[in-house]
Image (cartoon, rainbow, N blue to C red; front, top):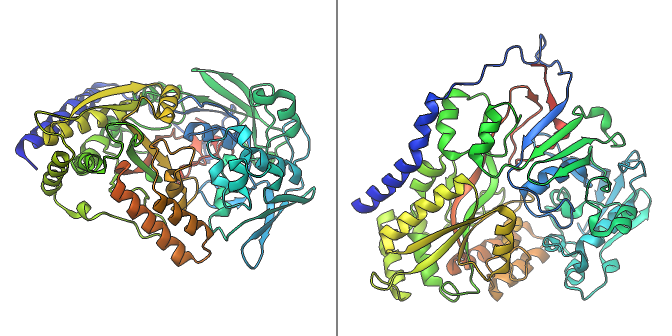
Length: 549
């Protein structure tokens, strides 16, 4: 590393670290005494859980929702055919059992006989047929409908060339559902935990239309029901007495609080207003490790933190050398060890470690940072930029202190290595999403992806040219063809090979800048029992309970 860059980076680190020392002066909260009573497992009289939840969800329509914060709430309001235990293991959900045909193309599910909607109506196989057809129907305007492509005719239904009733699902009887696939799909059961596959109550949707997912109208089949939603204040859920496994649910209420600023969320946690946080401000992790280690939970997480280029607009359209120069000039070791600081793994590719998949790593990942910087300068010059003609670009991120810290450090590195002039812009989450999707007013923007199921395809599909969440506008026919081949391939070895080749093609084009693979990081009060870290970072409230304290 150049001495100047070292100085600049360390200056940024120091500036971003100033607030850490201040927290040593803050009084610790009173330590809890006797959590769980004499046995350690005695329940509190009041079973209300208060959760920090990051950004405000755009919607609670399971077939239109996007993002982790909406998914957190939807897992409490609805239940898919398959669900997850507290440790993330796949277990029967609305389906009691299933069988798979010898060729792997037909799944037959037997529903739980005691399944009920929150209005008391029985949950039937027709409800799942209706839900899946609605999810795939282009009229629903789902950005997630491509996730259903493994189902027979799904791609044609999503494209509008076949009607929804041609989707490969049918109710054999009220309790038996059949899903037909166009190719064996090893991750199908994990996929069926996703909100896009949830059933919705037909009567409710037909009566209220687009307003069916609002308080007083939403009918769900999950352990809780929607009681209140005060935007920018809270979402209040109350127990659903008709839930099929209500006897094993302990909480009576769950409150979700949208707190976009991680510092503010932690302050509310420490003030006793929250029992759990969604995340932790990076600059306070060292302090929390020292002072509240038993409440700090940091675990491996199936997610990638990247920045995306708008490849449909200047200056990054048809500019792979410029995009690669910016990717090379970032020192990920400094960014992860000194800025994010929770144990994130530096990333040079898109797909995080997934069982059965050979991670794709470009050659330059093994270079020294000095060699990467030299190559970055060469590519920058070949792209037509120089000290007298520097790249001036805008970097957009959603409002949150951790994102800002990274953006500041990245801009300093680009300025030092290449002379790039970066303007930092931030927007509130929902505005940010709309801006990013428009592909009009963006150049470089924060992006990230948390896997919906434990398979590389959940990452690969996002960059398919027609995918609804491909905010980069990335398009390469070779990449699309390899994904299509993988989707049709029932051989796990050749399927993974096709996905690996697709990722190599994408990394040559560099529509994204990988920075790191996530870890989940949360604060959880000692009286919240039932919390278990898992790779998906899914913690449905039905597994949690409040101990006496």
